[in-house]
Length: 222
Image (tube, rainbow, N blue to C red; front, side, top):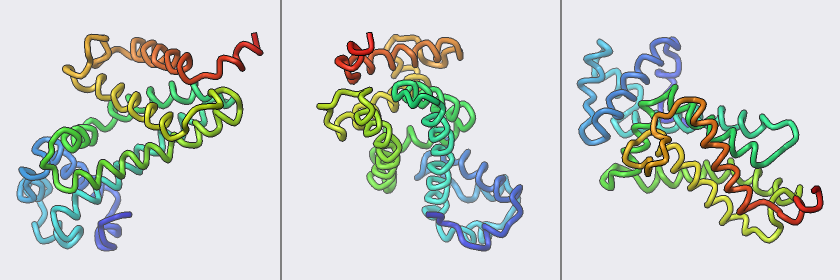
């Protein structure tokens, strides 16, 4: 749900993008409380009243950025989920990990905002925003898990909700490890080369396959 109004939506695309970029930069660098609308409008060269006319409040501006970021992240993930023509669930998971890294490379400021939200307890509406992130992730993963169980690729005794929680946790920590040095845990994932990221995504996926995969089905195929 967008928190802008038609005045903002009717602006030329280039102007909209400039406003979004400067606001994203401000929240990424300073967090929510220290972010300054004055700094944003000064860099943009527009009146402070214009920004409030577009979004109402600083909170309205942030909510618009949040909604926009979630929508942007969904596109690459959906493409990754459908990238496996043979509907291999684990291939879809592997491609999702890589799509996440690609997104962070393309939108580093957005991910910095997410990390601040994740680790700063005083972040406004933190519970609301993180709940929405987790719900969006679960909505993305549920069809993969259900299809995997139905097709026999995943163990038939899996608790679907627990499997979704596990995959969400693995994917979230994988991306954090690529982005934050002290969360890497010594595995060499932080800012790793593309080749190393691909190899580590494959290694994580293989581990998940061993734990979640239907070994009986695999044995039948052998």
